[in-house]
Length: 428
Image: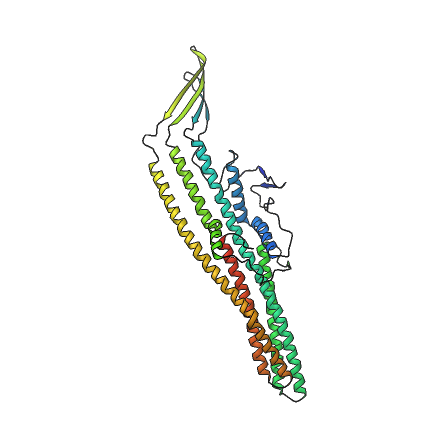
């Protein structure tokens, strides 16, 4: 969408910073970075204020919204959208060799039937469309930063888990070496224990690299330097606010961006149809002026006329029929989108409930059982009652349960972010 070039600076009523069109600098007005680096909600706030203001395409969208706001206030500002031509006064001066030699004329059209008011109403109804698009972008960024945040939390959880596995592997290596020196086990078990330690060290190196990668993706999203570290306090198992499905559906019907955009398009079409109806009124034009230098008859002679244009054959019948068809289409599309949003929200809500139940089962039953099995197998091997293969099998089962638990936590947070974006409003 082309953006009008205007060197004049625009002042925000809430801040002293100015916004200049045409500059490549980020918008300082109402888009400052949030200072805190601790909670997830502060990170999301920081992302909306920092990421939105610094990306070129969001900067263009923000400027479009500013100019669309000014288009209804200052007549000299050209909006990003096109309106029907307004009635403008024209002044003409002519000089000729015939009499009269000079003439000055002023044409002033008169807008009857509320034409000017309906044109302003159409312009004002198109302004919220840019605001809705900007709010939609904010919701998308909120989901991205939530998923990136918990991606870092997941990577750090995997790293901590790999550190614990390495400690267990080293303890197992010491026990195998002690039993080998005592002659209780063959050297094969010490080799197996060394292999377990080497594999645990390799997995730890890989997990740390994945953690740095996830942190870099989060910093890119926040438009921060890649090595910037964050103190992540909000855990992946943070509780959600309990809301019924019926309440969420009602909220989605009010704040879903697709429905908001379609509803506003209906209002724009109604305003356009009202303007087309007003354009069927007769157009009156007043012309007044003066002729100069017409000797010997006169030197100055006033003149004037009234012109009335009757729309006998141009009644905007085709445009009105098209507008009515567009309104009916938008109405049916709104109804279809309401049903689609309700269906997507119900599916996301049930999926989130299933993920929460899965996390609960892993936390309350599977993880304790797996950890207890690994501890008993290690103690049994330490006392010489079992071989190292039993310990390896128990640790493999416990490791798989731990990783599945972390993945289920991340999936639960992703489903919550999807549900929040479908609704179109923050839930916590």
